Amino acid sequence: MREKRKERREKIKKGVSAGLTILMVALMLLNPVAAAENGTMSVNWTAIGDIVEGAGSIMPSIGNLITAVVPVLLLLVVVGFVTGLFDGIIGAINDAFRMFRR
Image 1 (tube, rainbow, N blue to C red):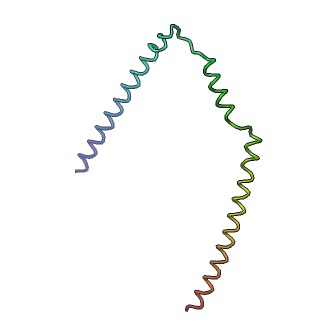
Image 2 (image 1 turned 60 degrees about the vertical axis):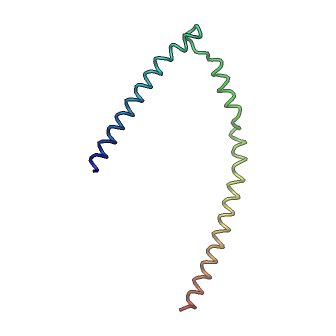
Image 3 (image 1 turned 180 degrees about the vertical axis):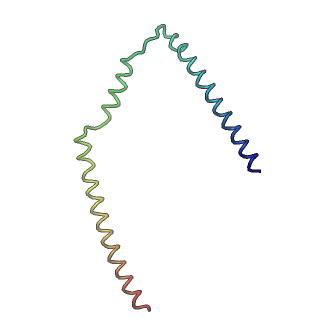
């Protein structure tokens, strides 16, 4: 039973890998055809540069990023310390009452 499952899995893996290989080859063959429709085989670098500049303008500067993140981190540290402190106090009280239960 396990051997049949293993054989089926191997067949599926081989089929999937063969299908992906055929798909990749077909896409690579279609790529020059799509570029030839433009009448040129060169890449329009200005459009790519505009996209990169647009993505870069979305990102804040490092200084602004640090000044925005540091207060949040400090707040989380303080909240974590206070909750840990109260957790320790409550745990100590529970341990003290456990001793009285005996």
